[in-house]
Length: 314
Image 1: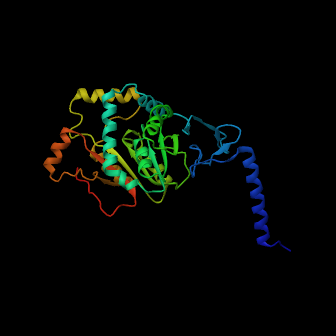
Image 2: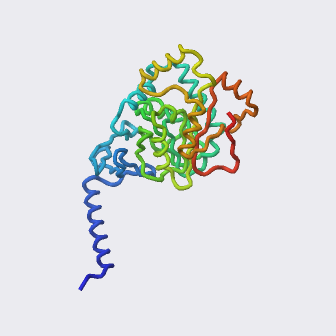
Image 3: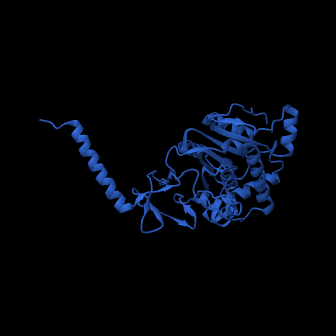
């Protein structure tokens, strides 16, 4: 005579509970940062908090992840792109005026046009933040929001982003060094995700976009601000050679992408491509003139849209 199926289910549940308790005893409790579970970027297994040391361990690949101060280094095994981006962040090979101009553009676009859409959400993730100004501004405007700031360089976060947040009195909840192509978070954790001047640098943007979709919560939204190459760029063979040499030296893709690249990417990845609010240029001749003088920017996004949309006209 067979055993009752309900009794078997209860017995299996008891065995599983015993196995989980043994796993907790060996590896520690599941790692959760401010309510956000963190996962191994290599195999997606939830990381465990080692009780006797300030470290996280993956129960599958047994790799340890450690922190330096308040910044957790949860990057996968580094490749040439990670190392090149870390070198760029720390200031080698990029003029100071270029860095400040780039950051000024991002701060202006975020504060004037994106910040109202992020204030009041439950969880917010900034990708490739550098100084992580967006994370700090969201935390200042919405203290109850769980804010996670990431960048590929743990040194830059520790030496520049964390002191800036402290100066602004914006207590960002979690600092993580992470690779956007393999994010160390469980699925469906963030209501809003923001990135700026990030996707165009990647050899395969689709890889990062798939990761962003994975960590977005149901009904969540991602907005990415990206540069568009000025019309006719590069304007000379000398400029083309200079950018090619810069890319080769860094191992990254620093050349702004043309509008046709962003249109193809939006079509292939089912993204919305639009001009930032307030930056519309109505007449075609004016668009050509403006884009010949300076590069424009576009928003890439997916997820729930606000009622008012801004069609791309640049």
